[in-house]
Structures are given as structure tokens and as C-alpha cells.
Image 1 (cartoon, rainbow, N blue to C red):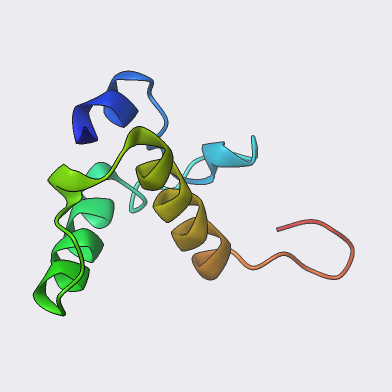
Image 2: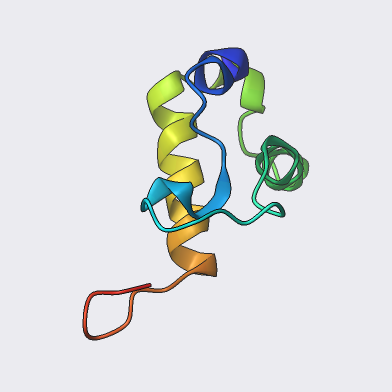
Length: 73
């Protein structure tokens, strides 16, 4: 399942919003967060659908890059 999201090229930092890139926001970051969640009893990343992985990625992005009041990140 994880390869489905990667194949679409969706894991590239601030490119999610179309505003540049952040080389720290990688597949490895998503994988590490997934492993941390798994260690706390949540399903393994391998059991996520492509949609669930995309939602996890977007949730991380929104957490790391909160939207300002004017709508910019």
C-alpha cells in the first residue's frame, strides 16, 4: 500500500500546497511516524489504504506547517 502513494509522487514536503519543498518531509518521516503509531497499538502502515496514507501525510503537513489566519502557510 505504501508504494501506491510513493508511485504517485505525493510525498514531497511543502509541494503538497504547491509552495516550494522541504527536504525533511519525506517518505521516511511518514514511515517513522507510522512505526511510532504502530508501537502504540495502531495498525501497521502496510495495512493502510492509499487514501489513509494520504490523510496521514496531510495531517502531518497541517501539523508541521499550520495555516496562518490569512490562509497562507
